[in-house]
Image (tube, rainbow, N blue to C red; front, side, top):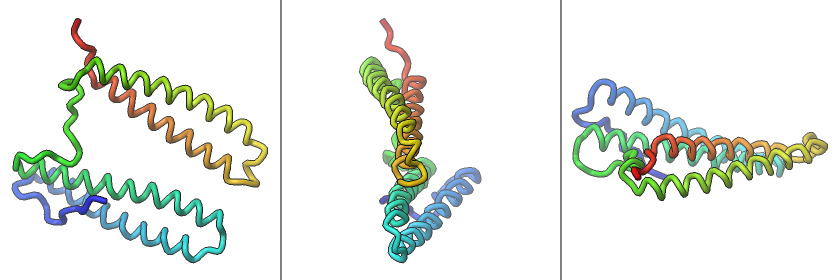
Length: 164
């Protein structure tokens, strides 16, 4: 996990300082949430609840890291020190555009096929939706797949087609 430098960026605009403070506060809050989740997973005698809470903790850890990276990147940008921000610049137009587009299209096709398969599996699990975690887990995977599709479509929208 990225440690968030808690001091606001030097020389930041009012907007940058406000945004940084918002991000840093969120990082602090996420830390508290992670501790609450961990305590809940330890206290329960329900294996199902502990399993689900651990899945939520994985998401919360990722969120914590993302917010910390956003804050660190904002600080790097605002301080104009020349260092690379933790979250890279949107450089899709400067990269090998043909390669980025080709790889994105391949991955997007794979994710769309996965979405169809997960939909089919979700329908098959309808009968056990109230007696197991399976339906819930597949439903969450469907949302993850939708997120993956959104990311790859973003890449394609922001990667110009190569000149011929």
